[in-house]
Image (cartoon, rainbow, N blue to C red; front, top):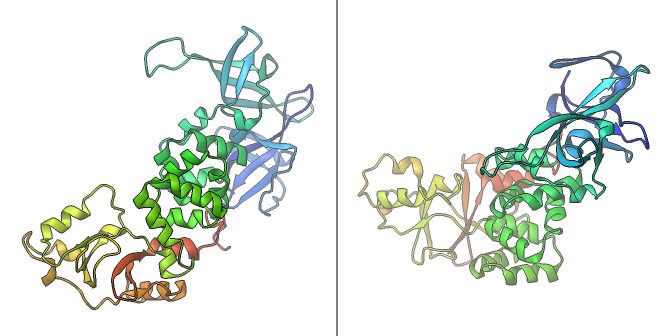
Length: 390
């Protein structure tokens, strides 16, 4: 019926933690609770149950912990040899009373070799032979959790982060490097963005915001108190800060508030070879690499008067020395900054576009609205965890 994604446990004063149920992911990424009373057997690759399962969305109770999300990565002291280790896995077994309890921990000890990629030894220890460190979960070492998500793409990392309790989410965010954290913030809903950014010192928050796309950073900062917004802008790169200040002037659900000020812009006498070189730059996002906008000078936003657009596919069909002025499509009409999001997504859908140029009152190109910007605002906040039929 679904996939087991975590085990719910309750800690007891002197007895081993007891498993109360499984967190199950069913179709549409809905997560539901399956009580242990319904479990008849646990076998390799399967959990066998009987009876009916409540399909209401899971809500964690205060006394429960999610073992995989909250126990893995915690430090423990081992009573047997007075050493320390980090929990990497655990075992649950059924006792004579029919309860499923935590019986063993799989622990990795500190490494003993000086080699850079070596790891410490591991061993199985009984639950009663290990004592968890007493610091708050937010202070637990998050490196184990970090290694588990190291290879995830930003969108998949965001989905994984949304499954974590708040303190573990913050701990993981603090372990990420600035670039990885910037990518993550761009993918997270507003509430989680604010939870993370509010836990960062201003200096680091400014570094992370510098690495985000100006439109994403502006959306985030629009929800911060004005005094902190100004403090962060003062710490940021001056050019990035100026872009964000300009975006913050516009209403959030308009072309001005949605646009990115970093499209690819070129002159009419730019050659096809030169335009392709602009597209090939590593820092250019795929959705922005789909077209080159042609304007009068200057060629950075706010650019000169808008002349038209040349699509990437068209560039591939012409020789390297061809000038963009002979290829430009002048029929794509730019939109003013006040265009509402409803009109933007209709235009994108009607003309099968991935972006729309945004101009000021004098027809100067000041940015582009891309299809991903519109989707981010049209989907519900919980779309990553919402079931398919909503």
